[in-house]
Image (cartoon, rainbow, N blue to C red; front, side):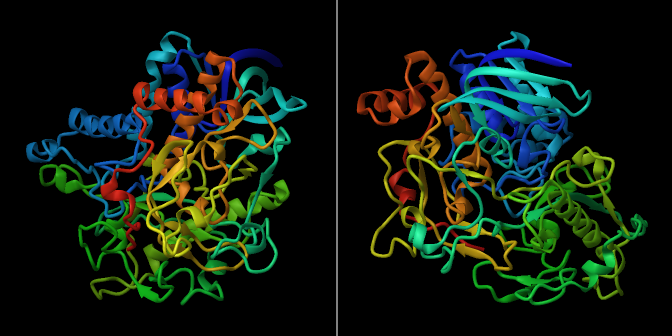
Amino acid sequence: MTHEHHTDILIAGGGLGGVAAALAALQLGRKVILTEETDWLGGQLTSQAVPPDEAWWIEESGATASYRTFRELVRHYYREHYPLKPEVAQDPFLNPGLGNVSRLCFEPRVGVAVLEQMLAPYRASRQLEVWMQHVPVAATTDGDTVLAVTFKSLTSGDLRVVTADYVLDATELGDLLELAGVEHVIGAESQLQTGELHALEGEANPLDQQAISWCFAIDHREGEDHTIEKPAQYDFWHQYQAPFWPNRQLSWNDLHPITLKPRFRDLFSDPVVQLHKGDFWHYRRIFYKGHYEDGLYPSDITLVNWPQIDYWLGPIIGVSEEEKQRHLEGAKQLSLSMLYWMQTEAPRHDGKGYGYPGLSLRGDITGTEHGLAKSVYVRESRRIQSEFTVLEQHVGVEARKGLTGAETFHDSVGIGQYRIDLHPSTAGRSYIDVESYPFQIPLGALIPVRVENLLPACKNLGTTHITNGCYRLHPVEWNIGEAAGALAAYCLEKGLKPREVRNSRAHLTDFQSMLTLSLGFELQWPEAFRMLASPGF
């Protein structure tokens, strides 16, 4: 059965960019249909189970007002619903998991609850429709305009055809770019194309893409046995070692992503509670039992998104559906194999033999029966060919030798900060992890070279393989989506096209004023942070 719908703004993809885009458009008075492939909103933060990687100075600067609201609502959720110790609840910078990777580590379900809370008022008024478990399967275009997008329900099989004045692609892989024939790039560009210091020296390689990771949550109850069934591909992963890796994939040995020197880091040996230091247990811990009275909770809960589960044996974009599914299954098997190895063969930190059978897969935390996250963690998407492309020369410290700070963009629609952090690739390359300056998000990177009414709303904006490494994280994706939603609403209000907003000084100034005054955007970094290189770990 096929149903027809119309809305002002259609947003495909309910990740952080999609939700932020919806919030901006809704606040500016537009009707929105938001679709999501899974049954959870939140993308990398929730269904992919990745605690937020944020700007080093996130508590002071580096996010929009709505993202700050989201962060405070997460803290409020714990204060309101969890029996925290009084002194913990009173901490204005409460970190529920006390993980080392971020100043705010928390359970995926809490992220879902808060996002739903932020959208709830617009659902009640029917200004917003949210379609869960729907995927785009076709798009109809007329010249430079996307007329309609067809979605398929994963539960009923029904089709829904949506016409909209503006279409935003917030899917994890940039699916609408391919369906609508929007000019885009995948994989790694060459130095000849971009002039970037760390781009490929030879030819561009579309199939050179960052590793994916199928994350999972675990707790640990010493003395119990929660060993899973041996995974089907365990024997392969038990023996596998990449040419650039210092040991077998299933070991406590990996590479330091910046120095590329071998390092040893195990589960419990170094519980240093400082950002980016310590053992794996404390690295991405999302629930800390020490925040509660002794004995109330049996264990911490930590999130496994570690080098050992980076899957780089093949890409999932630009290949057949059969090959894509094979690699997705391979990523699942790698993660399950890592868990099984930890339960049965991993050298223990206390010298008492091998294996931690007390490690328990927490599918209840990630919302799945198989125990892993609902979706694979995707670091790299299709990227639009845009009016302006962000290059390493604009943000990289080494690439801007002799200059201080990142490039200043006259058309800034937000800011972000993270290292240029690329995980090992499907072409057999190791990490690229280099310093970058706190940067701006240029509006030109959100505007396709040709299509007039489709906008990118997550990590599918106009970056390169290299600069995607610092534009792909949680608060930046949120900012990109929110800017796209605001731009679509502004264009509808003013009767303009996105490129007309960017290329008119008067319209651009008016739009930027709306972002800052009505939506609480930050368009430039305070001078205290602007020239500081992103710290490593």
